[in-house]
Each structure stands twice: as C-alpha cells, then as structure tokens.
Amino acid sequence: MTRLIIVRHGQSTYNIVRRIQGHLDESVLTQKGCDDAVEVGKALNNISFDAIYCSPLKRAKQTAEIIRGEIKANIDNTPPLQENHKIKEIHLPLWEGMLATEVQENFPEDYKIWKENPDKLRMLIQNGETTVEYFPILALYEQAKEFWQEILPLHQNQTILVVAHSCINRCLIQAANNISPAYMQHIQQSNCCINVLNFAGTGNLNEEKVQIESFNQIQHMGEKLPSLRPNHRGIRLLLVRHGETDWNQQSRYQGQIDIPLNVNGKSQSEKVAEFLKEVSIDKAFSSSLLRARETTEIILQHHQGVGLELNDGFKEIIHGLWQGKDEAEIELEFPGELQRWRETPEQLKMPDGESLEQVWQRTIAVYESILNSALNNKLNTVLIVAHGGTNQILLCHILGLSPEYFWSFRQSNCCLNIIDYPKGKEGSPVVQGTNITSYLTGSVLDKTVTGAL
Image 1: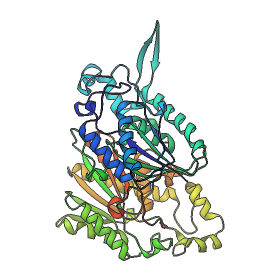
Image 2: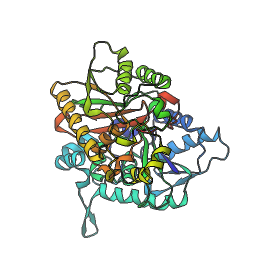
Image 3: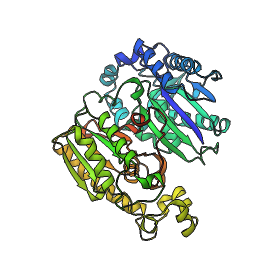
Image 4: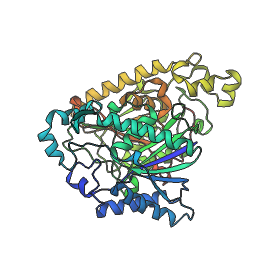
C-alpha cells in the first residue's frame, strides 16, 4: 500500500481578508498559520515519511518547512523537501489579487459559475495578439493527474507527505478517485487540514484502487467541527457508523443479523458522545438494527429531549447466505466471490441477499426523505447513525460516484462524517470531513478495527 498524507497550507495574510491568491506569491503565513502548522507537525511526528513534496509558493513551502521541522525533531532520517510545480494552486489570472467581494461585483456571472459549476468557468486570456480560452478547474484537474502519474511509480508502498493548497488538494483527491471536477466545490479543505489516501500500490494511476481513509481532519488544531460557510442558512448532518461488535472484531458478516455492541463498541460510542457533547443536535435518526440504535442512544445521553427516529431504510446490506460467516468460511463455500465483492461490488449479488443497487436505492430514498423533512422544518443539525455500507453509499451519492466506487470511502466503527447544505434546498452539499476517528485513537491515522459489514 502507498499512503499519501495531504495537507493544506496554514492561514495566510490573503486568507484572512479573503483575497484571491492563485499563483500570486505575495502572501505569507499569519501567526495562527504558523502555530497551526506546528500542530500538524506534532500530529505527524511519529510517522516515517519516504518523501515530502510541497508547492513552491511561499505559503505552502513555509507550512511544509515548519511541519518537517517538527517531524525531524522526532525522526532523524526525515527526507528533504522537494518543490513540485504540479501542486501549485489554481491559476485564476483575471481574479488574482482581488478581494472575493470585488470578484463577485465585477464578474457576477463568472463568480456564480465558479461557485455552482466550477468546471465550466472559462477565462479569455490575451497571449500576444491571440485570445486563448482557458478553463482553470479543468486545467488544474489535469495538473493533479500529471502529479499522480509522476510520483506514484517512484514511491510504491511508501508513505508520502504533500503540502499544497485548497483547490489543488481537492483536485488531487478527486482525480485519484475519479470524482468529477464538477464536484470541486462539494468538498472542503480547511487551513492546515490533514487528508489520508491509501493507494493499492501498483504505481499506475489508471489501475490503482484508491481509498479515502480520512478527509479534512482539523481536530489536531483543537477544533472539533469545521466552521460553517459564510451566510450558512441550511443544515449540517453528522453521519456516524455504529460502534464495534464482536462480529466486526472477527470479520464475520453481520448484514441484518441483530448483533449488539461489544464492550469496545460501547466505549467508542461514549467517546463519540463526549466529542459531540457540546454540539447542538436538533433530531437523530438511526438504523433500526441494535448496534446502530445502541450507538445513537449513548450519543444522545448528553442531548436530553432530542427525538430519535428508527428507520429500516438505513439497515445494512442483506448479505444473505454470507451472514454469520467469517471470510475464511465464505471463501471455502463460495470460492472467488469475496474477491469479486472487493473488486467489482456493483456486479455481485450475494446468494439470497441484496444487490448493491438495491441497497443503494433504499438508502438514498430514506436519506432524501430525511433531508427534505429536516430542511422543511428548518433544523440546524441532524445526527444519523447507520452502517459501513450505507454510509459509503451516501458519500458516493453526494459526490456523484456510481456503485463501482463503493469502496472509495473508509468507514470505521464510530467514525464521524460531516456534510453541510449551506444554502439549503437551493444549493449543493459540502462534505466537510469523512471517517474522523482521532477522538477514538488519538492519531490522525485510523487505527480502529477494519471488520466486515
């Protein structure tokens, strides 16, 4: 496995006044930006990196230098920084140096396209006597693919650190997982956030199986949840997977068999409850299976009076004749089928079970129903506790991925995902974080058990 840890630079002098940076290299880190970079370094200082890449722009390079200094204080053979122009920030030649409000006033139609359909943003650039048509996001997406094609063959089965910028980080994650550039504004990159991607290690981007282990972690900086976007008037969804069961521990397929939480699962649920203790929750929804319901009830012990609605639509996929069996037993009885499930899940229907398409349809239907009800009732924050399979489906659905990408998102027991709808029904969702588990393990790397669904 090749592991990529991707970090956005710390807060810059342009960030605090909301001035467009792009390729401009005038801004530097604020004191907060420097302090947060130190916290990133502390969070990563027990990881041995084989290479460290950074954007050559000052705000990213300065962040990388601070992070590397913290890591080197703990690990002597920390590699040197390598500047790479393929991870420079997006080029917005007509806007760079302007305040966001000035762009909005001077280019209202283009700004609207940037926010709603960023892949369609077009700029006409003068090149001598020739006018050139330039699509910033499409160019950046290709730049991200070129970066992966360059470095993956060099670092098979190694651990790499990349320190860059908001838009290029998003394109790196999207390009690795075949998420369309049209979804660039659907994912968030906070200053000094940490993302973890796991590549199968083939060295070929076109053949890689890539999993987002976690996305937009900020807890190492003492922040619990990412800030709401300016003028937020919609809803925030807190999506949690249930705590561990004995069958998770044994990699035994549960499906819709009603297995309770084990001791560790209850402890994990208590940790989620403590983490969300001060977060206001308006309503909770849970799968009707016991392991999800128990997790929800433990979380809600700090939220007395919050209504809980159980829903069969959020139940885990029915594994049919696989239910109750561990992987060795399944392989013996159904040779080769586990491999098909891992490689082409959209093509496999387990004997007497559900197809992925069936569980996909019922999961999305109940999610849309809950979302519409919550928006109509003007709820601010909703908790949903479900299962690994259903959560992976929801994240794929939100980012426009088809069932073949079912395994793109890791969902560990008692992980937290944050999804915002900042403009309510009028706008698109923003994934603010996925598979957050640092409150369980104290690490930015997910160290929980990876068990069967």
